[in-house]
Image (tube, rainbow, N blue to C red):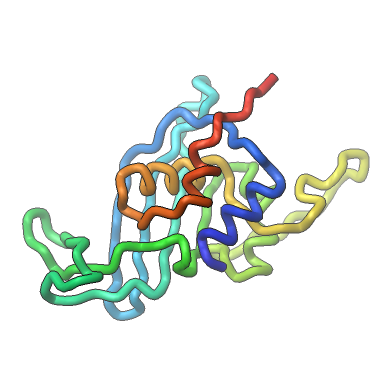
Length: 180
């Protein structure tokens, strides 16, 4: 699925996002052979008691490259510090993405439906429902993004790493949802 489609399906279920503490330690890896741009980050949970950050991954597919900076390929990629390996396309919201977060919200609400729509990075661990007293977490069965992935996308959008999109920006900059 394209990133904009995942954002819009998330917005259909959650009109406002939950707040997160911060995104840190971002790694960017580009693979020339399959034209994929991996962005891996740590998302620190809003719960101050939990010290272990979540691992958030977003992979853009179809990102082209050029050995010299030409129009459309202005983003330098550094494999070794201060040594440009190539120039890559700036990712857009219309590129196909696969995502993963190791938080429980992503696992219980989004993972299975992301897998069905071929937008899940890595294997899916099947969930066996143990009770029927609670309603399903995702009754519309739509793919989507947890707040940690949304936080990473918002950071990439704010720093103009991703090309601007007004629909995505309106949702990402909406006031956060309150817990109470």
